[in-house]
Length: 126
Image 1 (cartoon, rainbow, N blue to C red):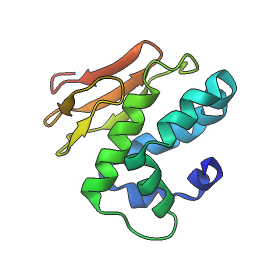
Image 2: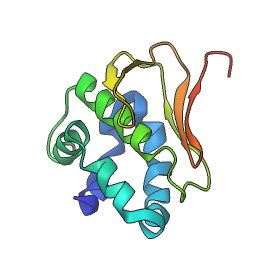
Image 3: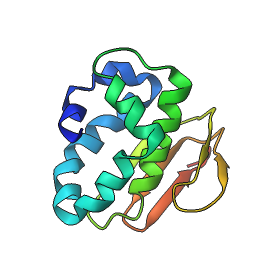
Image 4: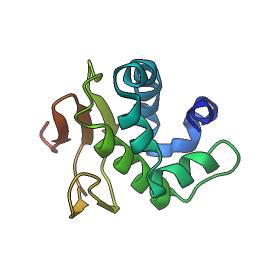
């Protein structure tokens, strides 16, 4: 599955495309540091299904947004994140927090950053 990520066309990510190159650049270090955490993040139902389909066909934008937010939240706190991975907002979808039993509606924010210390929501004013 992880090898297929290299074949995800960046253009297919729409408004979230700006976050993908940094994720792909960080992926080797993330795998070396804690492979299990990365596999757990990618193997989540919403994430796996959407990312698996991207190299072969367009994915519904709402489904893709949920998958990427879930992936970023699941990677937050990874010890191999030397620099934050930022997923550009604003977001329209509500997602299940992969680390807690709650729903998150990030809505009108500039982005979501996955850092080694956890998730950071980048507000409208920075």
